[in-house]
Image 1: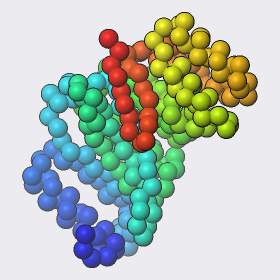
Image 2 (image 1 turned 90 degrees about the vertical axis):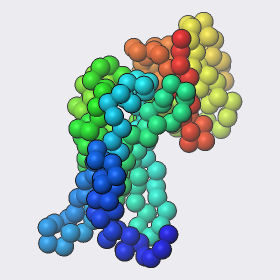
Image 3 (image 1 turned 120 degrees about the vertical axis):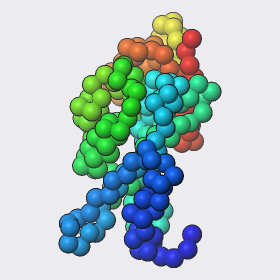
Length: 230
């Protein structure tokens, strides 16, 4: 709120140390270019909820990124979970120079090393960033990696907004008859869009076909809505 961006970054270490006095389980890591100039490159932090908190969360983790405003235009990498009341539960954060394979590797490895309680099969949701796709199986061997249908629908090369909506409805379908009905509609209105969709394995975006089919996942206005499938 006060001072320059440069001064704010100089206070990072002392700020994190102060937070740890309040939360002994608080974890942070700051990386710099070298021991000599200590120029900031990226940092990671996560608060320390007790073990029992993780057991109250649904077995799904959402990974995403956004560009920060300000002088340095850096990238915020985040992971969130959803609690039993469909509320967003922030887990881990990292700020890095850009969305690269190296930055995703750093973030997900730090995330995995400080993520207690998900040592069983669970669902990871992300966009189709190659860095995330390659790293998730290495860090979370128990996870089923799925893709956000909102991101997929936005990448369909079509001018028909109805086509994107039908695709998202098909992705949420719980029974085969509904899934096939919506996919047939897409086939009738946009064959090119259909081929793009079929090029992505259904097991990564269709609630009906996901191996651990327990969640309906959609993304609207940058907010994840996860509806539990009974």
